[in-house]
Length: 90
Image (cartoon, rainbow, N blue to C red; front, side, top):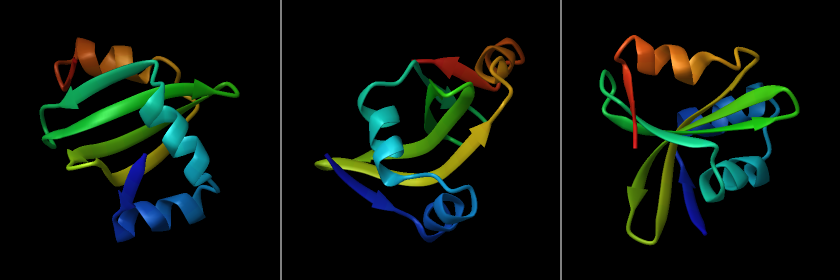
């Protein structure tokens, strides 16, 4: 799988100590994929070690452009964003 990281995404990987392999895992086998209506991006979510790993991305020819990567302890975050109408499940 080909992944291209924006400068922001690279900074977040380093700051939050997230491995590229974990990002690939989320994109290959997410627990859920959503569309963020406010930002206009796709969001893949996977629970790893009692944390949510959230990958904001765009599909590009032959792979993914990773825009941002977030770790969250709020396991109900996707449900709340869908409930509030910010995300829709894809």
